[in-house]
Image (tube, rainbow, N blue to C red; front, side, top):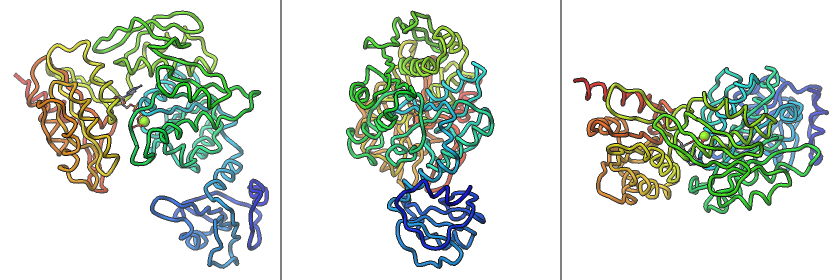
Length: 489
Ligand SMILES: Nc1ncnc2c1ncn2[C@@H]1O[C@H](COP(=O)(O)OP(=O)(O)OP(=O)(O)O)[C@@H](O)[C@H]1O
Ligand SMILES: [Mg+2]
């Protein structure tokens, strides 16, 4: 792209050196820089991009965007000084890719729990409607069936804009983004022109980062407040009316709110919910009348998730009746209350619950068909939000027998994690086993016919992070193997 044209995206700037004709690419990681590219110096948690400006020039960068004057020669590169490189990145990269989100129907899903589930449901429904769709979130980047790994639930600004452009190149019209509170508060979504945004719920998580629930709630609210005021371009805000933040989020946007709920009189309201061990049914009252919904997803929390997805697709212009008929065939999302087929008289589920609220919801979802005990295994990550640990175990106590373990211990000792968790236990039927493999084996060892076992916290993940290394680990595989041996005869 023409470099002068690109730089016209910024009003206040100081330029040292001669501006080159063209810019071939934009980078924030000096290792990826190639000839003729622009390098933007952004500050990360541990590294400061300004320290890598010379490196970028050596690799062929011809424009450096920086917040300060740098002690480097302007012979081979132009230095552009701006106030805030993070903001400049959004301005420049969106212009570079010619504002890709304007050419797509972009869905954004935020909330403490349920983002991945709802995003995947939206994707699955769009596919069944024969629409091309892309999805980016915790499970990675799915470009209409082509999979790529990603590091975060919400990717950085550059990656996000690149993914949007890739979708356009592939002729895709719909893009679903899972939106984390980190992503919002760090401005990773600046320049994404959302069309339909949804909120699932808000409960305790990530307070090591956001400090208070107020800050956390407001970070999520940025998704709604940043939708803008242009009402000639209609946008829709899908909100959970049963959540305490509902009214505050309503007041943050001028766009139309479509609500859903079970307790409140919402636009989409579920009634007469029936729970089974492999599906759920309910009556859905909607702006287009009442329909019987049958879903393979389990538990009341998934009734909320299904309604969120239905409301999003309704906002996209599809009839509720058609959406409801499609929902019937959609399987649970990988690792979210997913039933594992085992050769044993047990009901085993893999789940991703790693907050107190999610744990409560996961256990409640199997209560209606409990015949014997509920065994609940849960771990928590090391070196992350420690304040949530006791409340996680307190909710886990709803199960008859609890196994407290770790998920990704990182650099923290097993004992330190287990001690924090143990504080919240409300009864004495539990075991503390730091090594997750042994913990999963223990669950199977002590099980009896008719028991329900939920392995929570790892969900779709097939690894454990110990120190800074990833080791293969699958609750599912251990459970299948162990239960085969135990119930062989
Ligand atoms: N609507 C909901 N309300 C409460 N708990 C839920 C809800 N949906 C899912 N959960 C629980 O939370 C777990 C994680 O679900 P999911 O992966 O969809 O959430 P997420 O918001 O994407 O989480 P993360 O922040 O880790 O990306 C599930 O396995 C389930 O136990
Ligand atoms: Mg997620």
